[in-house]
Length: 424
Image: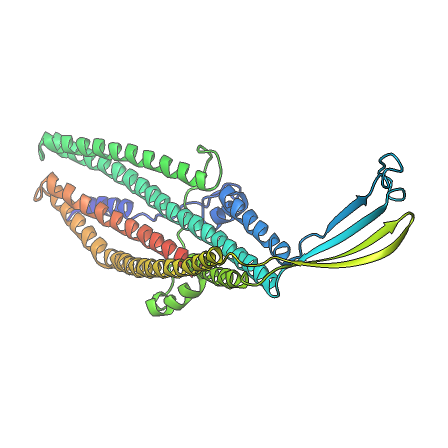
């Protein structure tokens, strides 16, 4: 192999295997890292803000739920004509008598506590839904970030290959001018460059779509600039991705299961409250009676409702039992789906990790050696241009597989963290 061939091969391989690290993005523009995007979304996303406000509102319902109803006041002017001795009057001191009544409704013992507990559990459920909204939003941001990373790196790789093909075209032209190669080699190099330019157009379109999607998640105008994805998050150690270890964490932390558990407890309290409605509620009152300018009589009163509509009450009790069973079934269904998703994403993450390792340690070095040999053979006339193109494509496909595996692992990690309700 000549020194010229070796030098050219080293340059071309170096271009193919160039580092994908990019210059850090500007601090004021989100997008360089997942953390910058999550921080921005937490402060600006309106859907998450709405869920937080609804959770706060649900928390404010706890105190009124357990409070006594407002008391009622009544005033009765009796005999406003004093048996016809005077014209009608509304003056309390001039009528026959004035009865004042102050009443307070009092629920049966334990009902107020149950209503307070139901409101508390509903507030807990609202918090769970807020956690679920953030888990879903953050997972979408992380996944979109990984896809943007893949597109950015794929664009960069395609441009490197395009530059490489321009250099190979020059080599083919030199060999064609010297009568050592056919003109078809030059044409093939030009066709390959055209195909690469078409791929760049498609990648640019995909990048614009992903940026618009990301800006929507951040509540920014669709055309707002985003910093280039500078780096991916480090993957957790394999020991942290054991299904048995994560199962308990998911059971305790998953926002959907948390909300469903709160719904079950609220349904249990609602059932207890429905059975409490078998007992009457009270109204107590005190009534001073005014004659002239002074109060001369006092009365006390008590009133209670009679729970005689047994068919209606039994239907309410049956409804509460059915709603409890429905809540329990809903949680069971949610748990089954959550753990199935967890197993699926853990398997996908492991596969992506192993694919990246095989590509990095085996496929890429093999493709590099193949290209070096093909390039040297083309320089000496032992290998045709099509063989060299195939070797170049192998390196490109290996590099794309490596980038795709990295992005896929990040997407799977985002889904696992969505199910977990927190970062690993």
